[in-house]
Length: 330
Image (cartoon, rainbow, N blue to C red):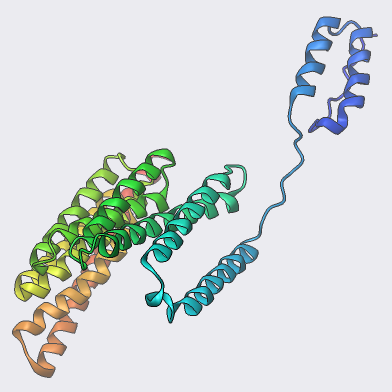
């Protein structure tokens, strides 16, 4: 009668080592494996780290932790709010720089791919550290060098863009990408702030570039890159409308239509939704420029609603068309 191989344990860990040793002895005695192979298996299992499951943090506990942290920050800000302007420049600069450094170090230490909650917290802290560095740069330039606000905003944008870009290269993820985008947005606004039209075109172009980089997968999390780029495109159109109302209104309409087409082409529902909502409001606002009073409101709502319904039917037909070949193939 041939010897049967005992069933191996389902998930061996360090606590099962005595049982594993006994099984190895049985397998060696029955001639199933050689002594050298048994020793190699035992050495491999001894070298494995403990597989005890980590305690998972529930979404409710995580949300409450973030809420508690936000309330604590709000309390600290309220306590310092009335005294902040009376504090010395050195103290304010040191305080904000310390906040930036603590957020960076804690975010680095909490990086743990095995724990989704700690990983999210690490990313949030790094996002806040980028904002803190921008604040630090603004205080140093404005109050330390006495620029009186002329160069503080530029310094904040440049510092945040460089720092957030470096963080994104180290750990590419959505929140670090958002911090990098905010930094570049500050740079764009700071160097074109003399004209809202130039600010708008700069932001609009930044959004187009961001969407292109997301589409080409240059940026990690392409969906997030497309959403961030979409918001920048629409924000740019709004800034253009402040300086040139008619041009900005039509730019918003065309940009919204372009976002819808991009969302349909790339099958990104979030981009389609953003474009559809923006198309409704931009069309309504554009028509009101040409038709005043209640008639303008009625016509605007009618045309905007008709456009949104047209988009909905077009998307529905595209969805059916894409499913038909798959159904025929099956």
